[in-house]
Image (tube, rainbow, N blue to C red; front, side):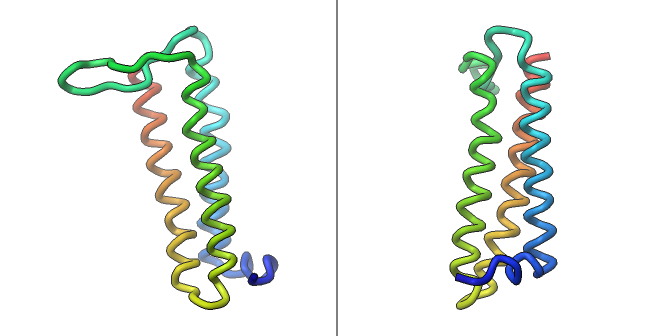
Length: 115
């Protein structure tokens, strides 16, 4: 296991992790703020059928939970592999930020669907 202090001294690891954490915190704040009022919200939309999945508002919190779980898993795996293969650690760190950008996009679409 690579020492965490040295692991986070790497600028790529530090900035991608910080960006993913900021986006995840944003998801935790914005989703309940916009979608807490109605008891049920539209959770999935298809072009052919329209809205096909409706559920309670708290199910949208699956997005930040998924993001946080992936963030922690990727950081643990990246830290374990960083000593042997730095490129895998970099790839996992960059994957975190891309995953969170996709989650933010999905959250925006769910919010727009329910306005």
